[in-house]
Image (cartoon, rainbow, N blue to C red; front, side, top):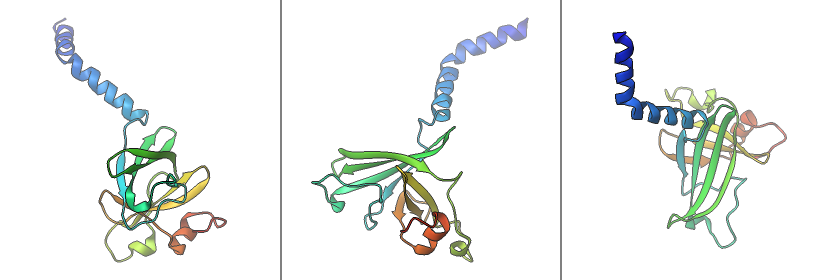
Length: 157
């Protein structure tokens, strides 16, 4: 009986921690917690599936891409903000595959897994996100070789 009493005391003392851990686990399992977040490089174009509001210019906005891993698959949210942090637009989409892709030809001899690519799709429109290094920056690529390998032939860069 002593063992059961010890467990009850432990549970009573640690209930808050157990409850918080359970909530955090539930949030992560439901895909509510972001897996990672990146900012679009200033010299990169906007994604094909993202247009700016009429009064905004590319140099006046920041684009953040946040990845989520859910039981139903990988998704993302792209958010456009002005330099004061006000959200101007937000779109959500899916990421193809189970993980980012590294092309064998691009990684040959570099000893690195970069660049890595993600095919990001919003309303059936794909674009290719490029991660050039382990940093919180992303780019969009128009490289025809990358497009040919990663996107179905009927979609051009």
